[in-house]
Image (cartoon, rainbow, N blue to C red):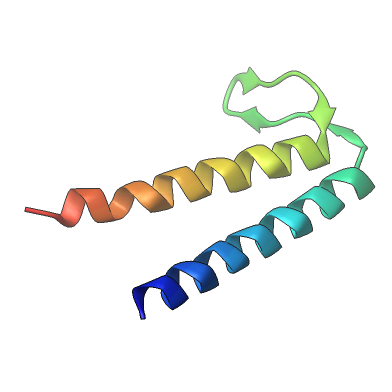
Length: 69
């Protein structure tokens, strides 16, 4: 049963990665992020989207580590 759950999780992760890759390729317009007085360099929207998804996956995988005691 654990193997099936792992297979489903990896399949969903692969599907998310494919969707992010397709959206990244189609969105090449340069954008910059502004926050208060800080402004980032201009990057393609797809790259910023991929970075955001990647950071979300990493931070989301760290949440269960904090709840273990």
